[in-house]
Length: 323
Image 1: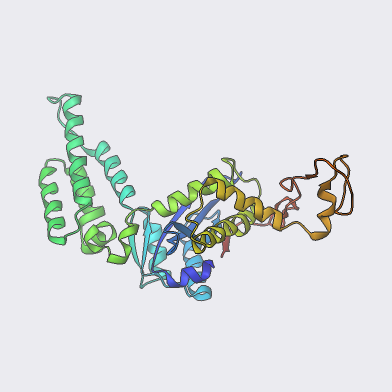
Image 2 (image 1 turned 60 degrees about the horizontal axis):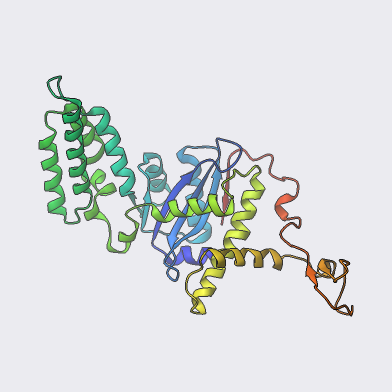
């Protein structure tokens, strides 16, 4: 299902999340698109790496393009030149767009450190001045008409003409040429990519992964992470689409829990089922026993999982791409 959704989608979010395992240098990259039926972020591909350069990203995207017919038109990323360069090399036809939220955060951080007033101004006046500039930057970020957008930029430059440090930064990093403007400017976002002006789809997904599937704890072994991504997560999204097909609406927290329990139960081997049935005497029973009283079924939630087997991936050092 993930490959088929990837092939028909044109817009994606790409982002990395840290603190996924006991090894601090490992990060998980996820490629997420909006599912056309559920309307929610849908992860289509993952990469785990301990090499935080452009090289594994480029190799991963090459792999997806060659093996899975991955031909995106637009990809939203954080403010990362490394990711821009990797996308350019692997997918020269794709347009990279910076997440609005991260653009604004980057501007505000640099504004706080670079905007200065002389000693005749109080700290309160300096704070009010910075607040006004931040408000104007937010004003620029939402302009969708190109002429209005460009005029707003020029107006802002006039406002900070006596702030050479910030003005130089703003021109060099953000407005020097059209290529830079196209990375973050709303007028250059295609109509079909308007839902992706922030990285909310993938940020929400990473939060869901850590809180629901990881239980707010780090995964100690890589094969446990792979098991979660290729079994638990995949099963949940398949169940959610099935709910839509039966006109039951989107899955809530209870449905999510039931779906995961159903998945675990479906993995129990048939020859193990009789040993899980307890008759009213507390003994293993079967359908031929004739006892009146309360029959019980042992919990299947504590049975051994594939993820509890010895770790076959101790030699992991570079990159693992998953579909």
